[in-house]
Amino acid sequence: MINEGALVETTDTPMVNAQQLVKSFGSQIVLNGVDFSVDRGQTVVVIGPSGSGKTTLLRCLNHLEKIDSGRIYVDGQLIGYRERNGRLVEDSDANIARQRAQIGFVFQRFNLFAHMTALENIIEAPIHVLRQPKHEVIERAQILLEKVGLSAKASAYPHKLSGGQQQRVAIARALAMQPKLMLFDEATSALDPELVGEVLKVMRDLAEEGMTMVVVTHEMGFARDVADHVVFMEKAQIAEQGPPEQIFGDCLNDRTREFLGKVL
Image 1 (spheres, rainbow, N blue to C red):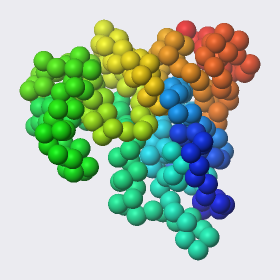
Image 2 (image 1 turned 90 degrees about the vertical axis):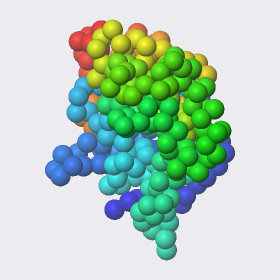
Image 3 (image 1 turned 30 degrees about the vertical axis):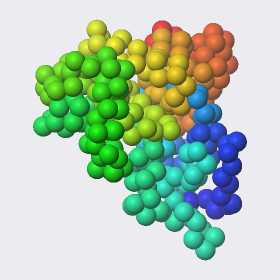
């Protein structure tokens, strides 16, 4: 059952405000009372061992996974639920789809449409979901392809692109929806090592431009250099969080120190 309480929407709230999130898969608790927030324009990197709840947290933020209890607000809007007779009930599919359209999600796997070119992959959702004029969408897609360093690959099909190039197209596709928030779930984990840098560069550029981002990653160099705030998750909870200089230089939690000792 979702927690009850007053809905608050104000312009000075964080871009993401998640309160007391609980999520289970059967008997396994994967989020256990998690409070999580992201300020506007901030890059928050979530690290931790496999199975700690990182990806589930990310998927709950745009209601790809339904929380068991708690609340999630993005830009002051309650995600996935609405109030009815003083209680929270799941929102309509149409409203959930509208909310998701404002939250870009880049997955481990690229999930490009194999029968579409890079350009066609990027313009598909803005035209058919947002109903934007085709000529405007194409113009913006060409700008985005240039932004991710793939302007020469507009007419290429996914099987003609490297993994890194496909992931950069996937990022451009998410950006084409003009989201207010970008979520990255291990965006480089499926790539060969020599292709990781080209994707991280695009993510670094987005951070420098002020895009609000939540990044789940094992790339500790990226976390240390780019994050405004680092969250360490362990056993379905946030064990420690703070600025990167604290987490990587003088962490307080023994488990954080042990984890970083193994991955750095």
